[in-house]
Length: 254
Image (cartoon, rainbow, N blue to C red; front, side, top):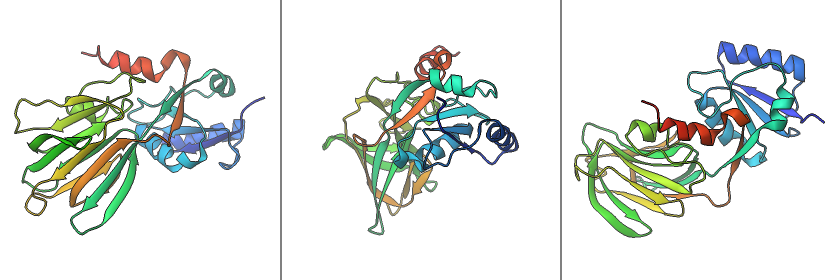
């Protein structure tokens, strides 16, 4: 039997046109009754879909109809039920960010790609870095610093010259953004069970923001980051174009 499919699409012309055609041909199950969600768009829309529907526990199959589609399969109109039946699951565990602000507030958010800290003004950020409660860098002077998942290691992390992490490796990437001191430090690869804490050393003169995927918190004083043990999402990929293979191939792009 075919799975009950719910279609969601980005607000672009191509994605909306594909959405209308697919719904007319395959139908569109209510999200509350769907067994699989098909997301039409790019990686940004896929991340929004993962966040929006995490509580449902329904696997998501993406088709690329956007600028970047690392988390997506190729778009195709024909044979969708057969593609879904053969698709391979990839389990994603998001990062949990707990950020304290200068005003005394607290914000909690999830990130499937990365949690990044960035300076808010022309002044470089001064950040103390601790792992599992032990200070590893007393003062990191930089434009920012990020913690990336394996799935997100080819996104902002790679652009910041961080390492590509094999999917399923149970690792995190800790990567500085334009570090000034220590000048030679280029980051670290951490076990996924590591709790990372960043303390902002001069939050009034050198304010810093923290962003979990697209959720930004400004004027932070401290951030703790850990991989979630309870929350997961499942992505579906065509066997010939799975995420693990794509992450491996990224290491050989010239």
